[in-house]
Length: 245
Image (cartoon, rainbow, N blue to C red):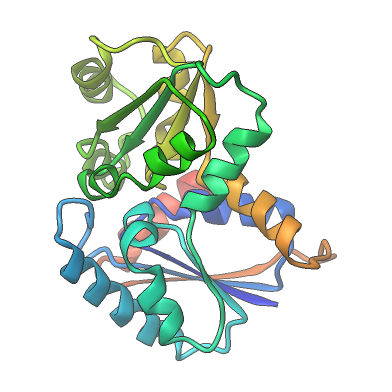
């Protein structure tokens, strides 16, 4: 099988890392819209338009399945993308919620949702968690982490200052939903900040669990062939891929 992974920038490489680790596909086509990252501050119509343009890119490849690794796209553009594609287009929000439920947390445990402005404003995570009975949810717009990751800043004083800016006044969470695929790339820094106590819900591992539950997939003998494309600065994206993967 050949799978496509679409993200607004470099963050979707965190999903690719999990896909490579589980070795369920023969080929992975990655496209990052690095010319227009981040999607989080943009309005819904723009997000949908960019997403459909990305779909046109993937039509150049004979893929069996497309994952929109971007949470913002998953929140706003999945119906339109599925309506215009001849293969399934999956998002990462439903798998993330499923992974949290599999963690067997108490319904009153504090859950922190970290995401971009657009994803938080959609309330997709909140509504899904409330429907499942969770009563202690903190939603936080943390978009400043996106450009830091795009610059390859995964630790250090600048990242520490940004975490302190966002987290200094909140209750320590039992679980954190990393509601942007950029955020797993700073996962180790987040764990250090919160003293290794919270469970991190990672879109990459969540989507793998979801795919294994939904499709009849077999582990491949050979490692998947990965091809990386970008709308701008392909060399920069590949440099991050070399570091992260």
